[in-house]
Image (cartoon, rainbow, N blue to C red; front, top):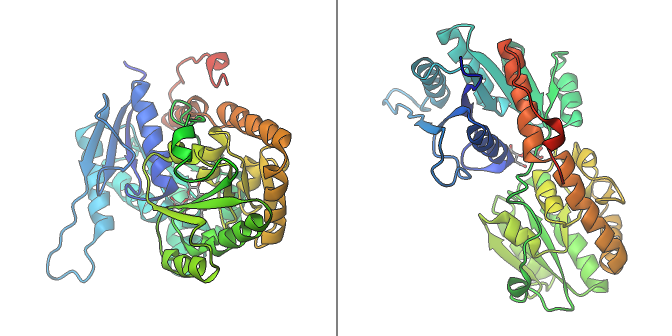
Length: 389
Ligand code: GMT
């Protein structure tokens, strides 16, 4: 019998860090010989080129006229069960509790208890939706019915236990980056299109939701720019974008701030920058700060949620209390005006990302969870080979 697994993965395919982590994990598992079936409403945006061992199953929702709201959750549950039976899946790994963990529970009820369910919590599924009384009971049920629950930081584990008033065991599985994609790119020529040689480049990448405090990004930048000639790149789109555009005009910073919109080649664009700004109100992990770290770009941000588990203050970036834009700006100025400090911090960033949050290490961690819930022995691995910087 093969020791490789048949895994169904469900995530939000078209946006957000949870979809990125789920898709990248699926690609790695497929590379490692597992059969991976993505079961989502559209093709995950990071899936990329056709790859061996990867399959895609589309969830189609009935739009029958009696429905005021087309029942996506039921369609997903049925599709999960159908694919699990047809493909003889060993397990479903669902990312983001709502509705995915609930749908996986329903699918398991339809298929039988041999189908195992692993749920990964990503952040706002607990820190926002878990606080909503209309959802908290069903989230708790779905987690209790999962065969394993993982979360992307210790802080998220703590918050899940606290806010859902549960003591279910939760495995820690940090976000990760693929070392083959995230490394400092040679972008000297491209950088000349965005900043002059004597200018520094700051960057913020997000979905422009209120939790990201994009107004703080602008405030930090304005303070930095008064002392260090610099420019700011905004990457991404979302509800706060138009407000931020107006603020940029009002502050007379139009010439200094560049809105890039959504971009695919994140490693390339991050490599242009000197500093990443992430002053979020909530951030269970902060995948974008890890992506920057792997490219040698230190992050300056808030000490919210799981960010301090990723960024060691003073070693791989600087953290300040949420909303303290003056402190964040002071850190940025200190870093950008001290080439020696910058050099050593940038090197420390690359080392930490490649050794602590690398693709191989995280894939093995998930594999261990899979074999554990299936009650099967984990194939031997050469740990020394893993995560060589
Ligand atoms: O940051 C977002 O708003 C998107 C969100 C998501 O669900 O995709 O990101 C969450 O999951 C990421 C991947 O695990 C984490 O790196 C982000 O920190 C987390 N966002 C929040 O907690 C706000």
